[in-house]
Image 1 (cartoon, rainbow, N blue to C red):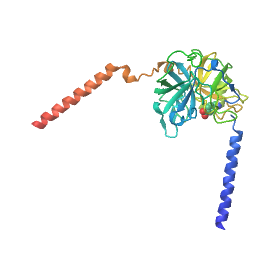
Image 2 (cartoon, helix red, strand yellow):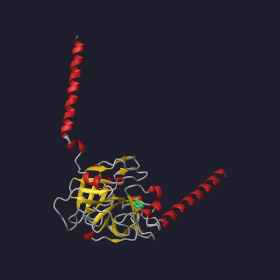
Image 3 (cartoon, rainbow, N blue to C red):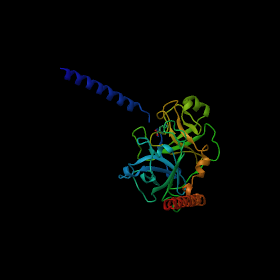
Image 4 (cartoon, rainbow, N blue to C red):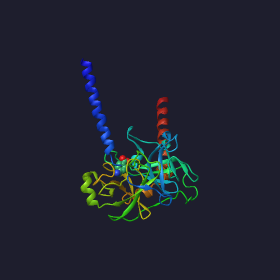
Amino acid sequence: MVHGLELGLGCFLWLLICCKVAAQTDTQPRIINGSVARVEETRHLVSIRLRKHDNNFGSGHICGGALIAANKVLTAAHCLYNNGRKRYRRPSELIVVMGTLNRYEHPNGTIVSEVSSMAYMNTFSPDSMRDDVGVLFLRKGLIRPNPFSVAPIQLARQVTPAGRVCQVAGWGRTEQSTLSNILMTANVSTIREQTCRSIYKSGLLPGMMCAGRLQGGTDSCQGDSGGPLVHEGRVIGVVSWGYGCAEPGLPGVYVDVQYYQQWIDERSGVARSRTSPGLGLSFSLLLGLLTFTATIQYSCRYKR
Ligand code: 4AZ
């Protein structure tokens, strides 16, 4: 009897939870309302993948990125961070694919590269999304220019005013599915800082900007993260976060590339210690000398 009651109550609760989850997924808005990207406008788009999940080519996609030099990719720091394990991923865990619109296909001209090193702002916070910017350096970048399917894009060097139409692209969530097989693109507008602040309040930190459509319906979404926001053929932002996707009054939040321009420009893929061999060598010599002196002193004392 008690068991029957418990079972009944359990089923009821289970049903309640299932209905709630179903309702949430049903109403979840979803590059949402985009169109299929054309190669000419997205030659800089890369797919960042987890190597161990990409056995079925395309299935390891986690984030987008933008090729900004022959072997340098701009992305979001949160794409390089494993939130479950509370640590950054190692370069060897990632691969970068460029030159294919369909993430499952590998046509001629597709480049699949390992990552030789990465950089992220060490002030990045997964809780506040502060300083959500990172770069990857590719082992096999653009060896020779392949303007047909892969080409780097430049960073914007000027502030983009509010109300400008931009393009955001990615393989992220669509109205129909959790990830898109085909690269999608959508037009969104830059939004006034004051408007963005009145929406996201203290969540809007320096280096963040809003873009989207205040009426809702069109937006970037999960899986588009790290991808570029492009205005007049230059990168002005990086997909970072938002409250849901495409909700009215809740535009997407992007990394303001202008704000981080110097940091991005200064990353070169060469470890800092290697850029100053003089200092490193002097330090090792000094350490060696000190150890040597200490050993001699110690052995002298011991002999006495
Ligand atoms: C995400 O979770 C995410 N609507 C990306 C973009 C947006 C929201 C969430 C913007 O990766």
